[in-house]
Length: 254
Length: 185
Image (cartoon, rainbow over all chains, first blue to last red; front, side, top):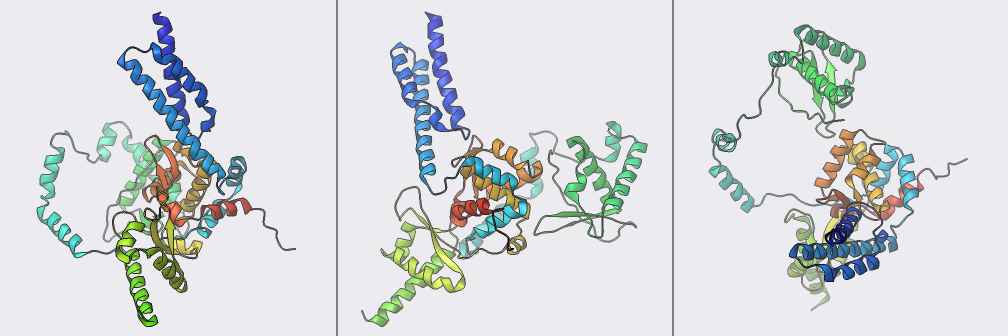
């Protein structure tokens, strides 16, 4: 008896899972046979006695409603003038170069025009915010006092201590990456994002660290284009002098 | 009301309409139909149409994005470029070709999948042409700007900004027409 009940519950759970998987992907919602599923729910309904079972039944019904909603959207899209054979479109997208894709987009683009302005009310709010803002040292104490150690820096000696580098290895690796940079860069420098890429994520992080060291030592310099956000790296024959500034560059997993 | 008075009244209301459309209120650009009715009166739709015609000289137009309900009151009215800027102009404005290509492919891909596709699916598709960091960066950027919508289940849909700024039909037609151009003999 109990086994039979478990089987029925399993059917409902499977139905919920099916609906969820269709809703969370681009699968065709018409793959769910609504009439058949509703009949299953109708047939099982008299068997449910406990609240949990009834809740599960209503959840299944809710998921079916979501599928019907998706079916409506799907039909609307298909009936619209935007419908095109998905396979053909995907194939075209695969064949086009990025320049052709970008050009197609800009030809269809009509940017919105709008004025950004600071109204007196906004200015007043900004003033109140600034007036009531506690000094940064106090804010940090409040925010981080319960969290233990705040994020800090890791220096070369610590890396040696952690056995990530030995002193000899570090110097030779630094020299190696400097040579590579000198060879690969032209007058226009070299794209930082391309140059930093290692064999894997770990390799990329190590290269990023070594480049940061070269820049800090003044053997290389970075230039960031504020419009395109392109970062260019240049090797320097002689250590740079003059004003320096820090810049944070995110290194993502490739 | 004389002809002259009528003309002056229309011009005054058009100026008001332009002000309302230009000034940013809230996070998203544009003004809802009911708001325009409050500022311009019942025939606000007609005023925006006349204004759109006048703005043609400056390469602008009043564009209407339908709202969730099928009424003019819930539609969003906004000012936009009548003609598209060139690729170089977009680049000068800080858009990289790679980013633009990612957006073009994402919009077309979502349309090919009947208006929704999982982020994973799109990322996998885009990684055939772009490195992972570029795909992540560009998708996040355009999601943040409202060109693509992402829900809690990482399903991507066309965002409100795409509906407002990009002629999707033209984009898809251009993509399909690429490579089919007949070169002159």
